[in-house]
Image (tube, rainbow over all chains, first blue to last red):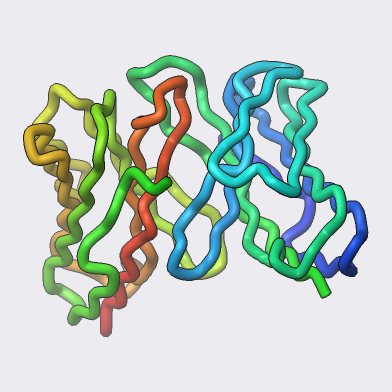
Length: 114
Length: 111
């Protein structure tokens, strides 16, 4: 069974802390994504990676960075957490190619910054 | 920016009824996908329709795509309480395999 695993379901961090959200997939997918989900705003793309060490900014990259040192792992980093980064974070992966880009999602990490 | 916009935003129906939701998008696409999200969980892929297809079925799901109107609809027939979820459409409008999601459509099926 295909799997995308996020390291934490719930996380509480203090303002100013550096926060790492980890995501691992076991499907040998080239593409990996980080989205945040907020009520009324849907899913917004933060960063996208299409290969090891390759990344592209999404719609809302400010305050975030990412790391992809290995194909299976994609990390989202909040350099200095702020309360407006309290949100649900969703990681996803997919194969490359334009004909079948079904994305597989992790269970999500609900981050609260206090 | 959101490429997909679902309509209506919230739907409440009785078990056994059909649920229909619509999605509009703005730019050319290779495919359009629908996902389901149960409360507080990750998204699960339901169905993908390619730009050269007009209709697709999967179990109780029926998806249509009208590229001239840049719109899609998702029909769930004979709804069940377990269909209670949020439903999102997603397009590859950005290209390069990046999916853009709509704001979602909450469906509540009353037993």
